[in-house]
Length: 314
Ligand code: GFB
Image 1 (cartoon, protein in one colour):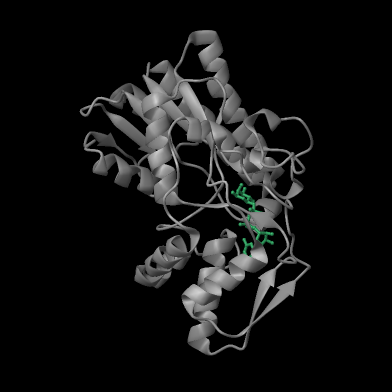
Image 2 (image 1 turned 120 degrees about the horizontal axis):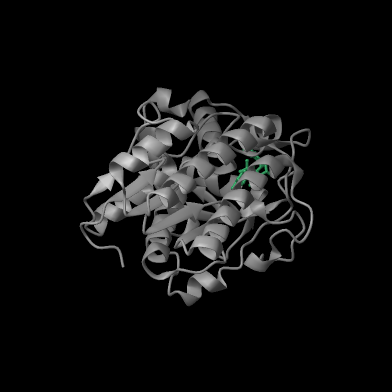
């Protein structure tokens, strides 16, 4: 168990996941948190990361920092997604190991699994067949981070664990019109269409893919649980076990936002993997069940969008 006065480094504390982990740690009474902004510490620079770990010597590390984006951002910038994520995660994981951190939790993504893995996807499906092309770069980086944690455990006994979240959403999300993930993108697009009185909104692809969505504060609770009770070599899926089609999601977001116009589909945009529902049996065996229902989560996220400065919509 993490001691209440333990020094805990949250890498990526200003992002949607990192800020949710900081909120959860605060709720649990952990006050000795270490954080650095990108301006203070460039995680892609090994020299800076080594100096940081030597100076701070954190006991626990949540590695939530990453270069993230939706399907178009991933498809159009594979070199950046591979390089930035690989360099960043190896620097942080290596720095934590070199400085004898007690435990590190590395966060990956459900896109590490094969495009056509049997559903729901079990952790054992990793590397059993081809990846989804649109996010292959990000997946390769995340697989490498997961494997590096497992190898450090195997070779040196490091208590470094990894977890693979499903599609996430919630406060602090990125609402960029083209680089964001689908749920925040739809919130912004339907809101702006409602405000403008537009009669039609265009959504990407066919609407037929299925996706699972987990509210980020539920994810953060699962991350703290893993840090407290899990010390296995295998990665752990983090999800809800519930899925819906992108078409159903657009109808739900339109309802929450109050957009009543038409929805048109642009099949020139990629659908991505047809389905990626996670098997969350391992997580549930640890006693965790998500609590935030999708419609309620979307309502809270819409409020976050409305409360944020326009500039935060990037
Ligand atoms: O959330 P999303 O960008 O990522 O797209 P993935 C999910 C689905 O929503 C795709 C459709 O079928 C998109 O075509 N979609 C419809 C839209 N309208 C939109 C829109 O306006 N914006 C976006 N972004 N999608 C990501 C990976 O895959 O999953 C990341 O690329 C990461 O690396 C993340 O792993 C968890 O779910 O397809």
